[in-house]
Length: 459
Image: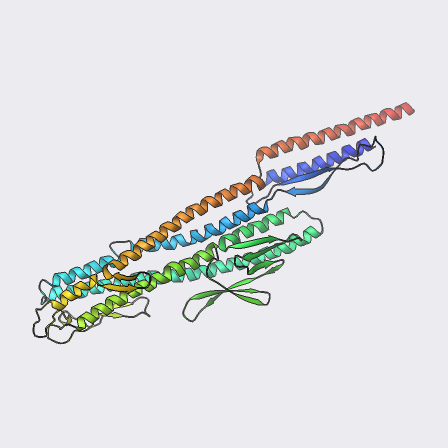
């Protein structure tokens, strides 16, 4: 009977192998599926004696072909990729807007100074004076248009940040729920491979949204935290991220876990959330401040120089520009009501045709202005330097994005080499388990024939 018992355990082990192989083949195209295998172990003999070969074979458990290190590498790559992918559309838009020669501040500045130069030929010409006012208004509109683009990007970043935080919170809850199910299933001896695959996919998606650290626990759960250590998921408990509006109009992040509240730093968050914060802090805010500095310098220096001159009627010069830092759409404007005769081009109240003050206005282009992100720079060079710096930032991010994509692709390939289903390998397994099953059934058939022969001899 031991022969039949051994063969029966072999047939059952082969059947377990066939079931596992069929599951792998069925999920060959399933994203995130981790292939499984059977752990086969011999059963020691239950009786003593040199002729006791053993009691067949057993399948203590199924194997899940997973490498935690490769998973961590893949999640880290997802975080870096998400960070650079999020930044690039914003950078490309700004690069395109600021680099457009037909609409750039540089083109407006050139047109304005060209009008001043033209007026220097005949300072008393009303059409030439009016052209200066028209060019000044066009220059103001270019400043305002760019400031509007920057303000719109700020609004878009705020909206996307809110959406990303909502996704993070939903994933945190999903991972915590799966942790609870996995712990319960593992305690009762149920195969948790499908649940673990689902949890890993959620962690992978979460890593694309924010940089994470993952630690395996003894009960089968996984603890997930931010790079800076604040907990996102611990066992069946999930944290909640909150976007908080500040009095100055900016946003800040807070994390609520259990009864604790953590204020999150904007740096090194990783993922899409980190990309949004980096773009806002490193690009948008400095650029908006710099454009405001330029607009303020244009208004201040031209108005100051005009105040030193005299209009056509001999009266003291009046401002040409009005600067309002609080206005998003009308930061720089031409003073309402200004007319051609008001422009103080003369340095002598008794000589309307004098152009000394006009020449001083033209010379402002070569004078230094203070721009927060550049320091002291010539007015005519400030915008060019800002555009060049933006182009450099965009190129660096594109290079980092390309590298991050390559690293992510390599990490996925490495993960698949261990955890992915190989159809050729599964085909071989299928044949081996089939032969194993058939061989054991043949053993049972032979044992039955021997048993029948023994009975016939007794009769």
